Image (cartoon, helix red, strand yellow):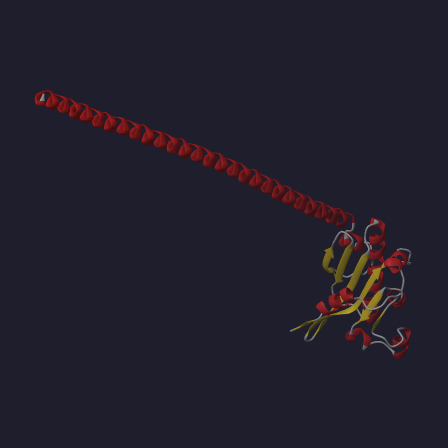
Length: 255
């Protein structure tokens, strides 16, 4: 009987051991499967995140490229527009300069002084006539008047000029200055186009928009001549013009 009991106990212990081993194996398997599942899930998440990041990066890159292309296109368009505008302006000025040839205009003027400088724009022109030590005072002032009238008429023919400056330089012992200078614009420029070729300097300047008579000429005038200008070395049909004043000032140089 005891022997049978021992057999039964031994059998129970064997079964219990088998059950424990089975439980351990089963739990181990489930744990491995769980870990594999987690690893798989993590891999999927990483792959998804990486894919999303790549997609976002590609989209950002595409947006940046598109913006850069747009900016570049806008910049190119702006430069092209600016270049076109500058070219058109330069072409316009060149066209006017071709029609308004001061040197050619003065070839037909008897006793006309040499042209010292010209600055011709699309609607304006500044002309400086040179001194001539061989001319006496009357010839000097008369040559200025005739040359200025010819220049004003040529300007009127272009149909585009709106501001004309004409001066004659004189060389002094200590430098140079504009001995005579006139500025014509608006109605004064329009009226100048009808002046007679032999118009006197007095009639020319008193009907200018602005005029200036330098000290070298003013000092040579008689009192009657000064009275003709109401004793003003500068004046005109319009008020002070800063552009004209600056231009006259630029004509004075000291040695």
